Every structure is written in C-alpha cells, then in structure tokens.
Amino acid sequence: MMFYKKYKKLVARALATNRPKSASESTDFLSAGQSSQSPPRAIIGAGVKMQGQIVSREDIVVDGLIEGSITAGDHQVIVSDSGVVKGDIHASVILVEGSVSGDISANQNVVIAASGNIIGNIESPRVTLEDGAKFKGSIEMDPDQPAQVELLSSVNVRPLKARSS
Image (cartoon, rainbow, N blue to C red):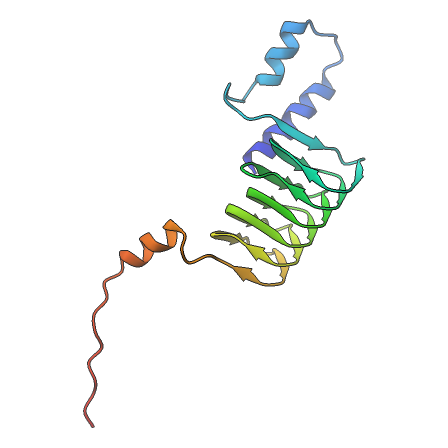
C-alpha cells in the first residue's frame, strides 16, 4: 500500500508541474522517495483495458481493467481501488484494494484492503482481510510454511488428564 501512495503522490506532483524539465531534473524527480534498489514497476492506467495473459518480471499496479491472468512470480501485484481483474493472479505479494473475480495465489502474503472485493479462492501462507473487505470463496493456508511451524513450536503442550467419575 505504501508504494501505491508514493506512486499517486509522484503522479500528482508531475501533473501539477507545467514547466519543462531538463533530463537530470526528470531523473531526480522520478527517483524521489525510491531506493536505488527498487525493482521496476509496470502501471496499467485507469483508462486501460487489457485482455489476455500478463507475465511480468516486475511489480504491477492495476488501475484499469484486466480480463485474463496475471503472473508476476517473485514480485508484487497491486490492484488499486479503481482496478478490476477478471482472472487469476499469481505473485509473491498481492494487495487488493479494488475488485478481483478469480483465484489468487501468493508465495508470501495476500492483503485485502477495506475497499477490496474478491470472488474466488485464495492460496497463500499469510492472508489479511481488513475490516470492511468483501470476500466470497475459500482460503487455503499451507501448514508447512515456516511461519506456521515457528508458531506451533512456541506453544507449550501438556497432556490432558482424564477425569474420574
């Protein structure tokens, strides 16, 4: 969610600035607030409608409409509040603020924001549903993930004693 807020702020500042910039000023502006090691990001604008399969080696922000699957492997997919995906999504981290009709599979984490709406199944080691999020489907969390094992190993287990009547 933090990346998306930075993205919106950068676009608003860029649109508010009317004067032409030199190449060095443009480069400095685009890199403001981002570390030099940030992965590239693909942004599908609010006025864009795409059909078909998307395979990406970078983070994706969906502001428009996607009719088809999105595969981003070890990267993030963000469906903004204006974004709509009618198809499956597979990525490392998935944030849904908009609408998704399809199955979601994440290697690390799925977050459904309060404005999010999902009709489909979720498979991920960690899932967060914010208060107000809409979800219809099933959630499968793999019990073999390290976070689950660490949690279980920290619990003190003691045998139950049978009561005599």
